[in-house]
Amino acid sequence: MQKFKFNAKTIFAVLMAAAVFSFSSCKQGGQKEGAQEGEAGTKAKKSEQVQILYPNWAEGIAFTNLAKAALEDKGYDIKITPLEPGPIYATLAKGDADLMLDAWLPHTHADYWDKYGDQINKIGESFSGGTTGLVVPQYVDVNSITELNDNVDKFDGKIIGIGSGAGIHRNTEKAIKEYNLDYKQVTSSGSAMMASLKRAYDKKEPIIITGWKPHFMWADYDLKYLKDPKEVYPKDVCAIVTRKGFKEDHPTVHEFFTKFNLKETELYNLMDAIEKGDDELDAAKKWYQDHKVMVESWMPEAMKK
View 1 (cartoon, rainbow, N blue to C red):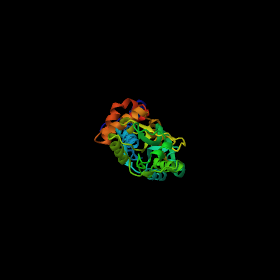
View 2 (cartoon, one colour):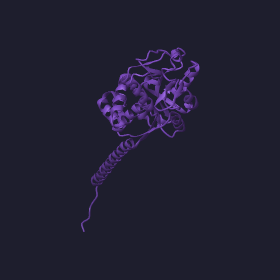
View 3 (tube, rainbow, N blue to C red):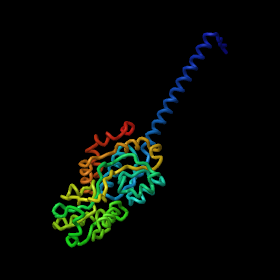
View 4 (cartoon, rainbow, N blue to C red):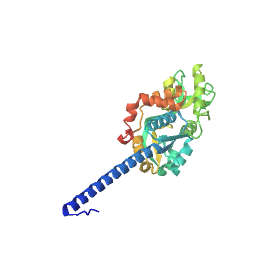
């Protein structure tokens, strides 16, 4: 057997080769680990679930379905659930859902805010010009709440309202007392109220409803608010409210909602598309695609990637 002689040069060459091999292996391992971490980050984003609660009102449906369409287009898992406003506030306060985009603040939902406001956060405004009041068609020759008692028979002594859990329902009961009206508020739902408006409007019959802006009724019908000299019906914003800890758990989505805001014309256009569509989410997805530049302007760069 041949014997090998190791001189200094040979030992140095062997050591250098071993060092190069070791560095190469570590580098490849680091690249692979980094790639796996990147993939994990992408998967985490795509599996990140956000739960949105919304009142079953036209603008609430529109805000919520638009948010779902936009965020799911970016890989998020968005769950939406309709509820009455009281349970929405209670659920957010307990931390059992993430947010609502249709909180009428600071006035219409004042009772809910007084009860739960210290347990939730207001982070933005989905619409900044909310108004409520008693609404009649323009063809009705009554212009103020103060004129209603002189026209009880004309309206059959009825104000057609929505659900009793809504702030506008409570304010209408207050208006009946403040103005000493000989009227009764008929409790129904948003869709039932709108059906009553359509029937009366088609026949040019007098009707009073509890109306608000934003709502597609203003685009579909020629309507007017009755003047409210006692200012029972206040001006509000449609606020975006979240559970405590939402910003820390979903920082990118949180930033998106701080910028989420629709102007009146944009919102009516969206609500009209949803009202006329066969499916609320499909209609919102199409509207989102048609207005993608605007909606993406609300998104942080990390969301667009």
